[in-house]
Length: 60
Image 1 (cartoon, rainbow, N blue to C red):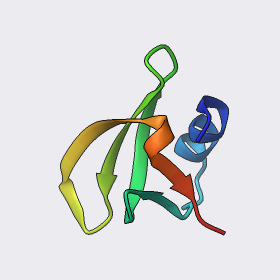
Image 2 (cartoon, rainbow, N blue to C red):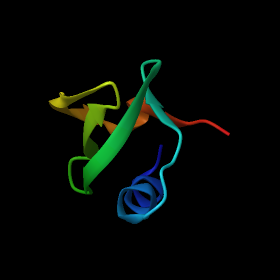
Image 3 (cartoon, one colour):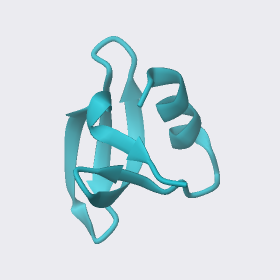
Image 4 (cartoon, rainbow, N blue to C red):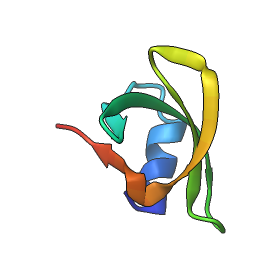
């Protein structure tokens, strides 16, 4: 996923269908410089982590 799209999803009031390694996730914050996103799994909001944007995919 590119930085611009990840930022759009993170700032949108609507929930996007985004996956990280097969797990549905929520994007909290995008770091443009590092090209990473702060995410958590929808089924485990306590497990926050930072991942490279290339590991994120948007499902139709």
